[in-house]
Length: 518
Image (spheres, rainbow, N blue to C red):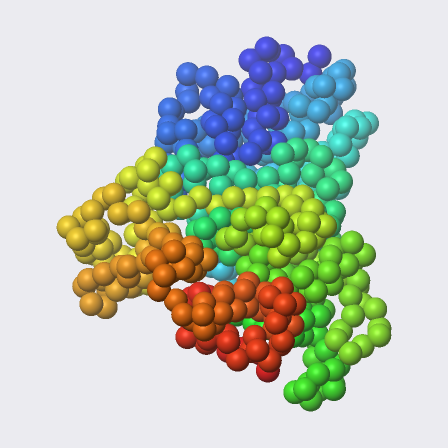
């Protein structure tokens, strides 16, 4: 027997569960409660940066102290001939791994924060000590542990866990359940629901899976994508005592809504000189610039032209592509994350979005909640979010005062039930407006989409035949972004469509300044 008491074994079981659970789900707290019993400090079920978590840190310190003591005791028994069961060895291994993680956690956090002057040198020093500790606990003479952890791999997993926790916990603000579910969902996108399986074999295969982020505009979809990209697994080379890449350089965002189809193709795939008018030299695209461990983020994927959807589908199916005007096949080894605020089921039904492409990007879906939904469950979160934004704008010293000013303005002029139609992005602009002018006045936004507005105008009999054709051509063009496709759908000549597309209406439909393609 390896464990001398049922209490020690129960503690090890709780730690094993804790080491493999999603830290942003209630199960984490349940595991901590099981580990500590009466010593556990009761806390709010949602783990959020907006809360005071001194009690939580006290729980963790208690667990660490007991894990240290029990790990040393069990290691001594194994070294002196104890006869453990396979389950005993698994529990010991998980307990030791938990302890090893907390021995490197502080330095990893400093590296992630950017507070280490020479991070590469500090990582090398840390690994030397980690290798000694890992050998002490996991390489016991005569004892074969079930997982057979490789020290560099364990070190890399621990660094990934620390980065993931930092980017999720510190940047997804709010104590509401929608915010908590979002944090948990991001964690699963990085590690899946089964941490043990991820650590065994999935850590080097996650780049093959595309993540699709859906949700209203202004709900932080790029922030979610950034958290996933910067938390990717980075192999550690024990000979060079360094990670394979700098995690800060792994995110490559591309907003598709701001570009024409030709420009999107060039930006994504690159081009050869002479591939199209204005292509004066060879250019590499984002797929080529992306490192094998990097991530290309395609924002507003719902607005992608169908012809480019076909090309991206090939990339996802074969991991290959070609530059515009080139015949050489190149390989893409990175990960793709896509985002949209559109209802893709409706887009597919209308023929604007290919179903085969959708089923290639939907293996992992994250839905970002609206600010209104978050505040409905936790109205106090507004203050926490405003303070979060204020700290980024003014720094720590002035943040509280600015937050007070914003809070006062919102309460007296907008009301606590203001729906924030622009979501978190609107809240950011509110904070900036109050900072500069000590006031914020939301723009009145029509609740109807352009198609509904056109129908209303027709029903009211307000349009001439020319007005109707002009507005309808503009609306269809705003969806296709292609004159030929618009002409085909309307059974009109391309030149007629071009003459009818109204840049002013187009700008209003799209919400940005637009130019009709040549």
